[in-house]
Length: 232
Image: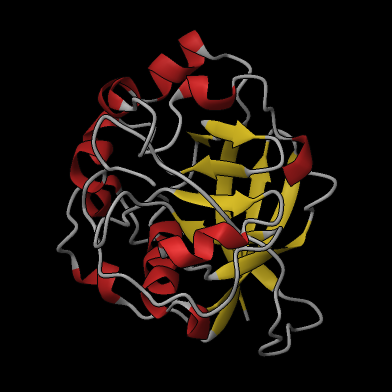
């Protein structure tokens, strides 16, 4: 359902059925580590990309609609959880656009706003995770087109998307704060027209021109300002 070429990306997230480690009463959000530089984003072989994620962790998303939080459960999809963790740590998702928001289906993002970074990561797939939990509302998973093509694009399921389970979309976390108030309010007016998913859409200009293209052609898209990982 999602291709990593000038094509389409896609799909899903839902409720959590597992409750893992307890969250501290007063967690401290932290931004990307000082060593995070654009040079690391342009070097996918850098050792900083191989750090395993904690068993559970929270990611805080600052957006033009407000703030929401996602809890990642590594046991659900270890490879996806690790990739997501390191992309956040190195600032990959900062200043990207929610380029695909389809009411009742998914809200998707993850194409870098920097064309040079996209050239490195757009088709840098990883091995698949097994589907351990269902794509229910609020769950987050990586988009892909065929086996081994999950790279950077992720989506939140806006409704019950259990049909995606059999297609191999493996949720690795869930929205725990701001689903109704923030995620539901992300602009959906362009639907599939602002790049769509990697399977059915044409993302070539997003990849080659980045935010400059999206901001000029689809100015109402909401923006992901910054993502931070809660550090205990």
